[in-house]
Image 1 (cartoon, helix red, strand yellow):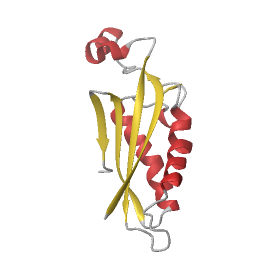
Image 2 (tube, one colour; image 1 turned 180 degrees about the vertical axis):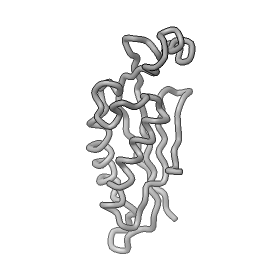
Image 3 (tube, one colour; image 1 turned 90 degrees about the vertical axis):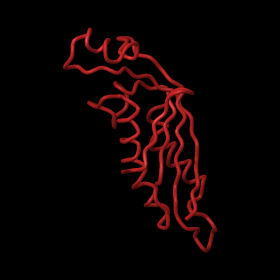
Amino acid sequence: MIYVTRKEHFNAAHRLFNPAWSDEKNQEVFGPCANNNWHGHNFELIVTVKGTPDPDTGFVIDLKVLGDIVKEKVVDKVDHKNLNLDVDFMAGKMASCEIFVLEIWKILAPAISEVAANANLHYIKLIETPKNFVEYYGE
């Protein structure tokens, strides 16, 4: 099994808050991340695809094609956007990194399978800060 990885970068703002809770409870649970005026991050998105190399190209997936998919389906929709307000696939959802990475998986997994019959999405890592990141393997 071969694993190939593509890394992309984007900037986005969000606010962590539960609308069913009071401002005080949101502040207690989410701290400064519950700021009414949002806060932003310089995100890194790492996408790993696994599979066997195509006998004609030697690729598990063409990395340019993978980059184009990630940019078109995710980065172009979230870069310099507010995840809570501007991103269709995050509408009505908690804008935590955990939920965000799940939604990204739902978009990328079928798109990757469509262009590379011998490959599957294996792993996504979403880095929010140098100290905070989430990883998801589709499980």
